[in-house]
Image 1: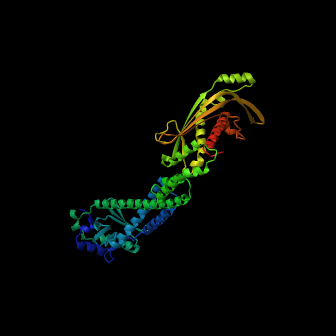
Image 2: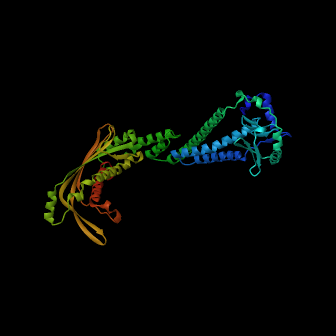
Image 3: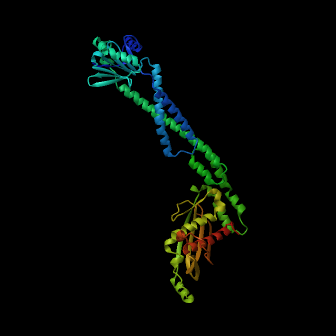
Length: 473
C-alpha cells in the first residue's frame, strides 16, 4: 500500500479533515514546529550582504576576478535569504502546516504538499528524547524522527502510546492510498530546480547591478581626475578604462581639440634660428598626428661600421700609448643598446611639440605600412684620434685610451602616406664623451666607456635636431 499521498489530489473533505487535525484536541497530539529563527537570521544576512555589496561599488573599478567573488557571495547570501522568505511566505499562505499529528489510529506527517501516514499498529517502538526534543518511532528497520517542542504532549503520548496503539483502528486515509493520489517526487525536483534557477538569476542580477554601479562610480571619479588633463594620453586612458563611458564623447572632443592645436602651439615655441624646412616638415607631421593609430611614430635605426684597425696601429706608433681596439669604443654586441638609446633620445627631441599628444616612439626594424616613420641611419668611421679615460676606484686612478669615432647621421621623417617631410644629415667628431660622475660600484656595467661615449654622441646629435626644429637656439 502506498502511504505517501499528494495533498492536492485528495478529496476536499479529506483535505479539510487533515487541516482540522492540526488543531490540538483531546484525541490527537499535534507537533508542528515553529518557524526557525534561522530564517530571520538568513534574511538579515542577505540584507547585510546587499549593503556591503553596495558599499563595495563605491570604490575603484572591479577587476574581473572580483565580479566572480561577489557573485559567489551573492549566490550564498541571496539564496539563503530568498529561501527563508519563501519558507515564511509558504508558512503563512498554506493551510496545511509542516509537522506531525498522532490520532487514535494513525501517525500523519506533512511536509509541503506531501502527506505520509502509518497506522499506529505499524509502529514497533516509540521514544521521546527530551534532551533534543525529538520523538523517535520505529517502523521495521527504519527510524523516523519528529520534532516535538510541546514537551507535555510528547510525554503524555509516550506514557499512553502502548494503550493507544493497542486500540487503534484502520484510520481514515487508507481508502485513499491509490495510485492516482500518490505523491510524485518529481514535483519536488521541479520545485527545487526552479528555486535554484531563481537563486542563480537573483545572484547574477544583484552582482551585475552592483558592477554597473561600480563602473558608474569609477566612471565619475576617473573623469574628475581627467577633465583637467592637457594630454591625449590622459583622455585615452579614460576611454580605455571606460570605452562606453558617460564622458566618452567629451573625451573625444577634447582629444580632437588638442590635436587641432598642436601645430599652433608648436609655432609659438619655434626659435628664430630654426631651419625652415625642418619647421615645415614637422608642422605637416603634426597636422596629421591625430590620424596615427595609437599615436605611434615608428623609429627605424640602421647602424654601419666602417672601422679600420690600421688607424689604431698608426696612433700607437705615433704616441706610444696602449690604445684599445674598436670593440671598447663601439662593441658589436651592444648595437641594441645604441638603437634603443637613440630612439629614446629622439622622443625627447620632439617632446616639446608632441607632449600634449602623448606620442609614442617605437623602435622597429620592420615598420608597418601607412604609418609615420623616423628613419635614422648612422655610420661610425675610423679617425686618427683617441680619448683618454680616467677611472677612479678605491682611491686609485686607472687610465685607459680608447679610439675616437666619426659618427655621420642621416635622418628622414616620413609621413603616414610615405612622403618625405624632412631630411637632414649631421656628422661631427665628439671632442669629449664627458664624465660618469659618482656611481654605485654594483652598477658599474651600465657605465662602461662605450655606453657613455654613445650617450654623448646621441645627445650631441639630438641637440643639433633641437636647433633645426626650433626647440633650442
